[in-house]
Image (cartoon, rainbow over all chains, first blue to last red; front, side):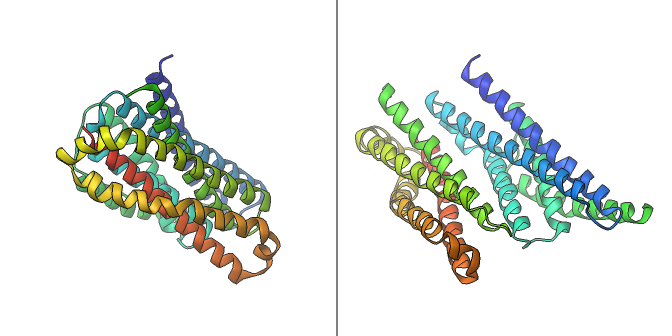
Length: 167
Length: 151
């Protein structure tokens, strides 16, 4: 296996763990809040899923930097000024910053869960764009991202209310 | 680029990333309700070691290769600010980072009991740990900008 294939595989595994974990966290939150309280089993399940997301984040970051090193070594440094790359890095920083804000309870569940959920999905979609040569400006990507966070926050809140009502 | 310079550059990047991830872990662990001192000690010493080793690898690469082979190309290219502004800022800020990280590690190792009991002490260490983490992220981004400016 060459280095590029190894990096692609690691990056994909990291993204799958992150996107899958972030999605499952939303499912667990809805299930857990449906009876108004979180049981020890539900807490354990949530903590395990957060662990999976963190592993995904570390794998995605390390393999991402692996790509940057590879670009440098193969004379493709022009790729380091790609707006999609910078949008992805900004979103990864938002994921990491959001985890700290959630940990210190400086962000509400309303915004925190939407930010995590949307960030992982947008980062994955940007990866697909990048590998298929689809290009947008940094500002366009970030505008759609911010708008998505706002819209998804409303939708996730509506799901949580629905889950509480139907229980 | 010869193999030795390629290895020192890769070591500089990888060790710096390990340091930045460890600095992030320090902040994550210190924000938890129940402190896990052994995890904090492990993360803070990893961050310190990562930065010091990255510092030496980066310094060797800068003195032996970057100055004569990369810098002139950046300054004459389309993105001269990548060296004139970003590299100049990076190399000065990076001087502080290992010492600030060492201060965080000492505060955790020497004051582990106080960290759990004294809220103001914990807040001060958290503030320093957050500062180190933010600086590490900025330095990482600077590195990407500088590398991208060399074409």
